[in-house]
Image 1 (spheres, rainbow, N blue to C red):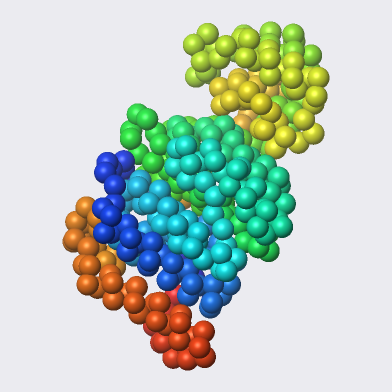
Image 2 (tube, rainbow, N blue to C red):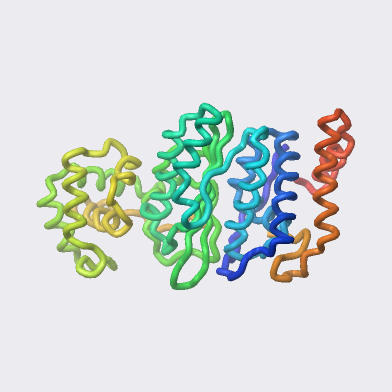
Length: 357
């Protein structure tokens, strides 16, 4: 069954505080029941597809009862899903990563998942790092990634949900990735990007119109460092990048020496070069524009619903009785379906068809 939501922008302001224990425990239970129904009905790959859909994910956060437009809907919803999956390895869907320090444990957790499932963990660790590098460095929209989760099925399909924060506005932006819809990491790779508004002139090296700029940057990193540094350090004043303030000459030289000695074969390999950050990549991109006339794209890729109320009382406080009833109904439907009594799930299907889902 296909679920189709219209794409909309949604504001994600920073809210303080945490989900209270009574709500968190219910969120985990309800998330687990939703996951079991989805996997039983459609399989783990369909779960990935929905998690990677920005509007469906936002709607799920609302159903779970978190703040409908808060940045915390990302971290708390993924946390509840991850905890629910930890207790349900039989679903064939696994999650690694999280917020802050937990995001840095993604590689370690992926290797543990690989040991359990036989999946090639090294492949997924590389993808995990690459998606983070792209959203931090290749897409420079003013948001710094602080939350990263990697989702993978036993069949090898994967999704990524990560979030960045703009330190000036205190608003968040969420980035969704999905393997089955991805053709090229370097060319408009996102399944969706949720933000409060378009960024002002973001550098987007993964836009289709940046193809020439990417090729030019690859040419630059194969040139002798002395020539490139000379060109980069004499950028005209119309560029917003201020070399003295924004980029350390020694950092540019170090990157160029490294890439000159071992030239990356693809733009993806370049992004994974140790030490190559957003500012150095921007300097190389502007240098490519000066030397080769290849201008990058400055286009933003950015593109929910109430069920049980919200943690902060918006639009109304969480109705615990209704919440518990939903959990019980879903859990009972799954149990009965596994016993061959699928009437409850069939009722849910009819309800979904009635609402056009």
